[in-house]
Length: 46
Length: 239
Image (cartoon, rainbow over all chains, first blue to last red; front, side, top):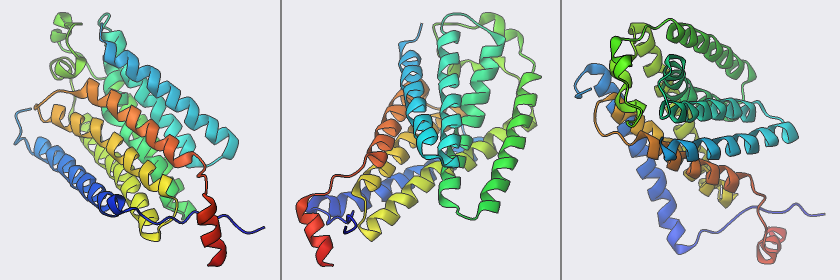
């Protein structure tokens, strides 16, 4: 029995959308960490 | 009474059952750790429900312990175990997290409440009132920051890294989508919690509900076996 392949070929929209999503979420992650650091440093109102 | 935490609690415990069910069927310490993380998430939202009915000193401590200190770290530890294959490293970090968690529990249990507890308003979210009520010493604040940063980097960073790897290799599209959803869902309460800590916008309850729904969808997407079309199978057999 041949092994089942799980490879895929991205569609036109997903070819651009997935890298953009990964990039945006990475930026949001960095922003979250920056806010935590700013809060620790006492620069934010709280 | 706040409706959103009730919904969050129901969804979270449903998610927990799905994760632990998979753990008992397939094994994998990462699933067990995610299960523990989700129980903590659910306890956090459950205490929000309790604190929407009446003030309770143990509930507010449990809310801070689960919601602000431990949940992200335990969920992130699950991802750490999934990605770091060197058994000794993962196990060492598991033990370290256990020790730090015990320290956090001890510090929180003995943390005194201020007189502001008497004027606790059940109509307002606990996230807008806890700073005046709960005395947090340097140790508690330090552990909160460390556990949150560690958990968020592991959980969100790990999901994004997994999504990137599957995408780059062009395999398992469902895991690409699932991991992106998990990262997006985990970021919601992480970002909202950071904004609360910073004294800025408070949308914690809503972010917890949306976050857990999106993570659940991501987990479901990532773990559902992919149906392979005839074309793909034929293509694969040629390669």
